[in-house]
Length: 452
Ligand code: F0G
Image (cartoon, rainbow, N blue to C red):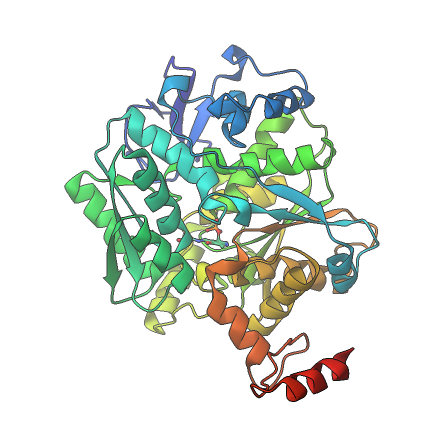
């Protein structure tokens, strides 16, 4: 047993071996299971009330207090202050939206949008990448890598580019990444490998490469990433004046967020900082619905830490036999082999969770509503609004429930998807098409009078 305050251990409750923070691991060396970062909470000075964290917000000259992640550092106490790598991530907002509430079918005042697109690289990934970058620095990594549908690569690239602690190689699926995201990796100076394959292929390759070449892996199998992503939930609670909502609705891809959210609530409950937990809804795109299929259709569950491994194996085998590839316009979540599957099952178990799938049309309609009544988001994030609407229609979410939809990425990440929606045929329900008009004053006035 480690005597350290923070250590790594397998998620399997039967397995008690622990590993120090100086080890670079993405799976338990003995069981191959995913790893958690665990803490000896009796030795951590955690504030007795969540309200105490709020005061730090005002301390803008201290980079750790200014960060929306590290302001909560007693809840992820694995790094000495002088090793923390921060670029001011986590300055994100929780906004109430009555127009989206109406669209979803909720009572006025009950729907909130958590805008993680407001992070420096434009997605929630910065919450996790600040933590992984910190650990990379603690172990003296000179090079880091990730596979990505675009946001992880943009985030890792910005941390490397601005802090210069390490060099970065990113693996992306050729033709599988929105241009806003690709442009970021290129501009921030990351070496960018376009693999002829999809995200699942790129991840398989990067894992092998990192193992062989001793490169630090920054995908969400890295347990430090998820420690940072827990703070999204702390900020949601803070935005609600530390009241626990009824539902958290989040898009599911590699299932890092949902896993991190579950861990956040498990720990807050254990520490006595909250007295109840919200329900969790994870929303898959129909074309990338492994979690939905396994959890809702095949009954796969956490089962006290022993999910049915045979069921998972045979499901993946069938997918391979049929050469079934993930396919959705929400390219961020175009993933068929979610690496955090088991951790997500644990989160669903703890938070009495549900999983739903939504079509690309529903995703884009949901996204358009966030655009028309909010600050906008990228397609994957639209899945949370579409999922909340579906759960409302199914009577699982009540009109009086307080619901938080997590918007994972910025509106400008994937402008093609947005422009295609607004100008494509057949016209979708919420299309706002550009109006072609001759370069002629009278003609322009005619159009304007027509809409006045
Ligand atoms: N939303 C956005 C905008 C994303 O970029 C991702 C994942 C997800 C949702 C899914 O989150 O994996 O925690 O379930 N993007 C990864 C990437 C895979 O490479 O950028 P998850």
